[in-house]
Image 1 (cartoon, chains in turn purple, cyan):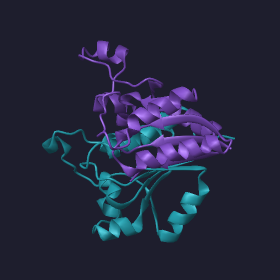
Image 2 (cartoon, chains in turn orange, green):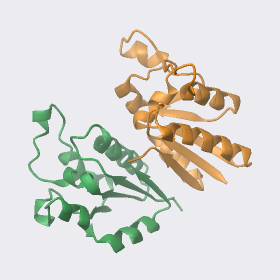
Image 3 (tube, one colour):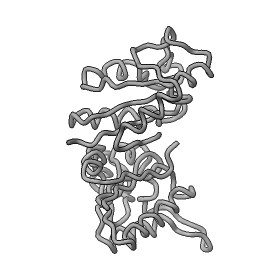
Length: 130
Length: 119
């Protein structure tokens, strides 16, 4: 089955951990992840600047490893990212900000990417919505 | 056939960026002429009320954007009757035409769509 997984809640929320474990289970079950899409406060889980306490799960780092290791299509909504300070090098330069913090494996793109993926997917599974 | 999506907007317009971000999903899908619906539920119904003074909160008023949705091909707009009633609102309180659904109508609506996003 083809899945799109969307995350709307911040990295310190239970939803971010559930989404990560669900995504791992999707692949372990032999299914396909068409795209991961981080929106709203979910964009913070694609920041390389999140620091977890030593005895806590570093969910942002785990996401980055998971996306890179499985060569997944990981998209962070650009408008939601800009609004919350999640920038890649290009956007940091464009808006003259001192640093880029988008973690490895992710790319900034538009909401069209969510719709495009949803058209291909059997299931759109959202985590951390209201 | 294109897969349909229902966006359920549950936050008041003054409660952070959720109302704006739900609307942005709708507008992005409208650009691709996808079959979309937008349901205002719970505090989301406050987005529909007339005479908002967003500027007093240093925010932008979304009403004009909502009123323009049919121009972008999105005319499937719904609101939950129970959410209106709980907030002492009715049809005359609303700034744009939307279909008012009772609870049974909500279930039917949600079942009609392939994908559902709640924000």
